[in-house]
Image (cartoon, helix red, strand yellow):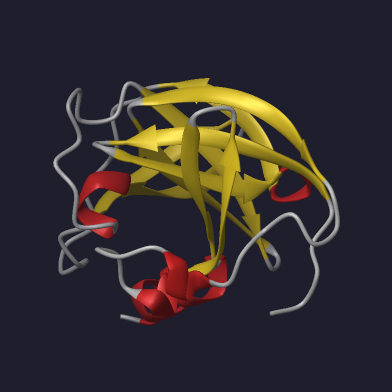
Length: 143
């Protein structure tokens, strides 16, 4: 695993605390109604309009195999390559600094597909996973 340092945005999807690099987070929005895309995978809720840009909205609970308690009270708009991708989350928790070497390899966390996790970490009494956006969105957006 390559060393990571910088800031992470922590958010909760069901019982899972996740993180994404702050540089990948464009903004945090209130939940929006999506226009369904015929034939899209179940995790894709549809398209939302964010100031004139059509963005794919993905159900974070379905994407990560979790029961999201509020079915996505917030939307985290992420940069993925040249695309904006929005993910529903139950709540946004914090923006935390992470020092180089502070994250552990994925093998230390059970119960989640290792392909979608870059690393695991701790902030206070809370464990979290750093998501691999390419592994999460690549197969879904290609479908």
